[in-house]
Image (cartoon, rainbow, N blue to C red; front, side, top):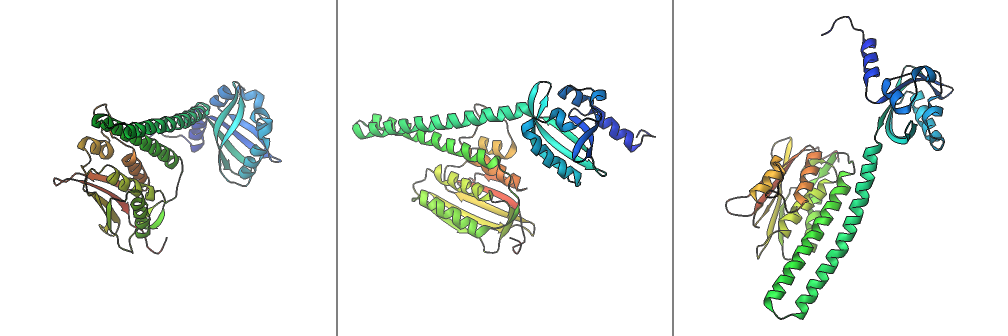
Length: 344
């Protein structure tokens, strides 16, 4: 440890060498007046230290249409509250988008930190447009393919032709389902949900009722005690629904059966298990989901449902396990922290 270095000198070193633009200011009649800037600020906004000292930060870099927004942020700093927002500011390259963080210290003093996220935001907008266009066009084309396959089946008595048309329709249905799963993942991962105490039995009953409506031939049984609660967010319902859907949709048995159970492993953990009598989840796909094995052209999953479940469970500080017993079928289990039944 290097001796004889004061806290002030260490923070001064950090201030000067951060890659993000940083400005120190003091609020004078609610207006942030610049006390100092780092090298990154000079580079991003195109000002030198001598020319900006004592100047209004907002007049230098805030677009006129955003002055009220900046004023609201400054007010929070003035009463000692930290800020975080996505803002637009004028730079030497024109208007750019920043992640802004305001950090107050002492009375009326503060730091403003600007992280340029223009490229990331633009990429996100491009991906959003691409996703919407691709999904819309994919759904339309798959509807046409499915309709043509039905027409072929209706107008032919030739077995091979009918069989080929049926396979085309099934493939279109799988692609349509994959598109729906991708949309669900996009929505779920784009939202932040808080963890709370959730009772499992009402959740399980709701999920089972939905699956029974969609899969009339499947036999779904359950064994979930009334008092079992878990620490999770509302998205855990989507995870459970996805696992049940996967167990039934890919079940090639003439009598598809699924059993949902929940047990308290110990005082801190709840195990939720879905067992089916289907063909089983291939070992390579299990490794990709549970062991983070590399995805290759020969090792990949056929759907996104298990990925969605894995990400939701892990966001609740849980884990997921997959087994294929020797007797056949699949067992998908996820483990969540137990919660106080009185706190939901």
